[in-house]
Image 1 (cartoon, rainbow, N blue to C red):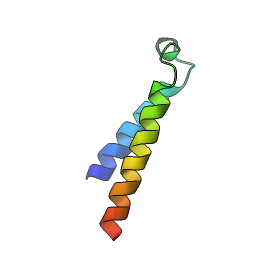
Image 2 (image 1 turned 180 degrees about the vertical axis):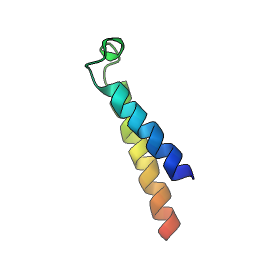
Image 3 (image 1 turned 90 degrees about the horizontal axis):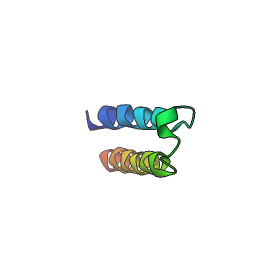
Length: 51
């Protein structure tokens, strides 16, 4: 269940990180940093499940 929630949040952050949206042009690297952090958390959760 946690993986699905993280995946949905990751997709939403990636969509928000696109600089084509007028409201997200001034955010800088914050959305991509959050996306990278979510990818790392998702990988850790998946790896800990199979170890």
